[in-house]
Image (cartoon, rainbow, N blue to C red):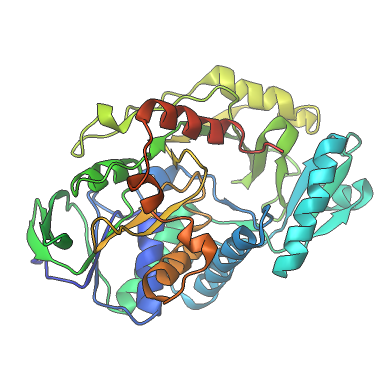
Length: 407
């Protein structure tokens, strides 16, 4: 391994968020960047277990714009990079089974219209044409977004890495941060298992270890890992990779085709979380053991719309610990309490799909003289300059997960 060199920006964490941030910095002309990853390669932790859907329909214009920027980034990488993110712009169907949800879809369309995102309310006949094997007779409303799609998460990370390296970003794998150097209330460098290096900004994109990294500079941030699972079936007749992604909010389900099989995941009404206090920076979160009762519940719920799902053989379970925050918002930006310490975490299960947009938000937070009210609302200061407790924060973060599709 080559000797580590000082850098203006050090990014801690080689998942989709960390690599997306490095890419965004380099593309904006900030190329003195070093990314540190504790694993043997980038994209091997939570990112590797992602389902890979990217949906742009959100409840506010700001969030729609964030997702649209991610799609723009994936398109660019797919077109320009020798290493592609495997971006498939197949569109997505969002299906409402009740009137209350149908009303929400009209509001979501208004947000999409205001943001300049193409989204249409379509009928069951058109939905059936787009997804022939799914039953839409129960649907009260169907929202179609033609520019949504899916990607392979590990491919996204490798595409970010490839393009970032071309622009001069350095990557150091098998490199673990052990301490952060501070002088006069400002980050000045880091000590790793490979040696010490100087920096002007340290960007914490450490995922399920983001809490630990923040604690190295005395910041306590409510970043709560919550279990998430999905399964993939064996190949099934009639399933094509060109079929749209789908979301069924009342059933708390989402899915797409992967390897000719059905990928189906969902949000559990009684979530399982872990406390980062219980494992060390040098350790790992607890192993996620597949919860077959939960996974079979996803299958049973979806069988009413897709009868072939019932009893289908499964050959893969995706599982991991995406991190959630008590208010359901990212934590992005420089701490006013510790200058040079910048957060890019607490992504509420949007780390991979939102990685392109998150990089853009981080640039705005660092370099715009007057960041938008939305970007300001993501600052880590909202937790470091207020009073809260871990017990309540964990419950609230888990509630964000449990009500992911809440109206």
